[in-house]
Image: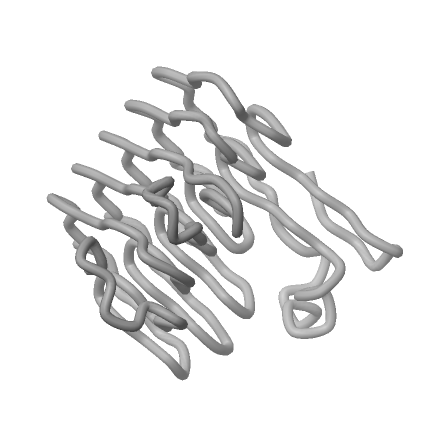
Length: 178
């Protein structure tokens, strides 16, 4: 499957949105651009991930991606400004490309009322290539998110780069922040 230039396009290996439990799912297909040079242009118009697009109040557990994908190996967005999602025991072995790129998740967001987004015991072993923020586990987090027991084994490249998280926004002094 290839992403092209349109108004907005989404491509996810298993599901667009999750509010329940996705367990033991896997993706080995490619979800990439027609031309990788389009990554920066498509950033605001495309979304892709190996397993699920938007993990809102749900749990994504023991899932694996081995395909080459844009933006995120497992989940595009985990949580939102009003609810938290959970990713646990997942593994990415595929190459992930784009402007903001995470081996497990592109973006994590949480609300301040203890509905924190969480990632636990996940592993990225894939190559992460970004033109901006790149993280072995998450490209960016916004709010009081939790990341624990995670490991990055893959090469990570971009401008704001971290082995675990590439870019951190608005975490202030929350007790449960990473």
